[in-house]
Length: 155
Image (cartoon, rainbow, N blue to C red; front, side):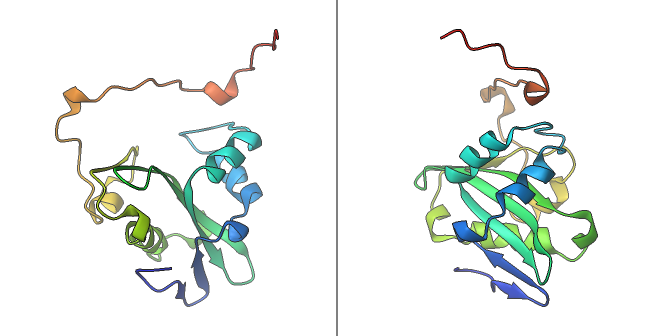
């Protein structure tokens, strides 16, 4: 891993796919405000198509996670960032973000985005700012998407 040290007292960061605990990630994300109820299969597909980092605590396994959706050339979207409550307040989210931002595949991008409800200060420390021209942005938002039953398949 390039950038910040991949180890810190009692913790280790890993970009290795084999170190990502999909079940632990799903367990957290299914309760997160931004994707409550997300199905395991959706988390599996999201992880497979993204650059992910795991925060591993000695003797505990994965206690944090973040992923970047990117073409690795022009654009990236940081999402699904979390550190379990018992491990917060130690700068671990900062460490994960700093490590991701230093990744060689994320250098020279024209745009790097994220959305957050309550962690603006955290991301501002890493250079993220409010949208310069929010009137140019558009989105399709489906709140509660994972909480509503899927319609039956009529194939």
